[in-house]
Length: 199
Image 1 (tube, rainbow, N blue to C red):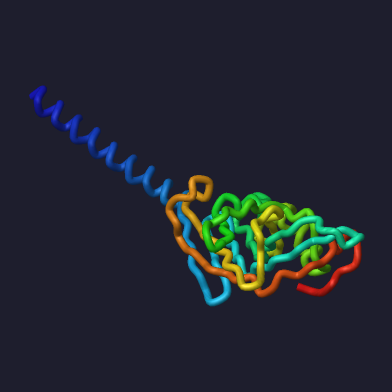
Image 2 (cartoon, rainbow, N blue to C red):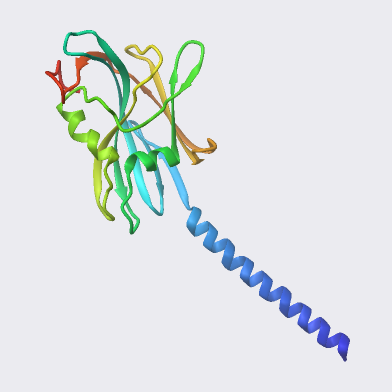
């Protein structure tokens, strides 16, 4: 009789463990849901918190007021939809789920993407602040982010943007998109002086 009770108790425990395991795995899957894909002109990443699209990459040489070189930068233009219940910064979302590379003839140089300190024109100036601002739940904005310490940049250079399961460890690549700099303009910071042209 004791053997039967022990067997029933053991089976019940196994059943409960299996049930809890399936519940836990379902919760983990729900929390970790993510996907990415490319279109003709963009790379898209989405999860339960948001959807981000990177659709354009451009290069600029920024000059001082006296036309001396100040810095160069590679700017990424995108849109972000906040699907969560909390405000989210697009540049943080990008850093969590994307990686970028400037491809030269001899190496892949990782892009260090941040809020851009300089804006090459009015359009970039309007978008720049959005990358560092908090997007409210349910809202969609366009934004600009940049690497302000790239290697030598030139017209036609390849810039690769990738979406990862874990961008901090750069593991579990979900999608990859090649962009090519359409030009590299020399311009002044729009917020500090005149602009040589629109992006």
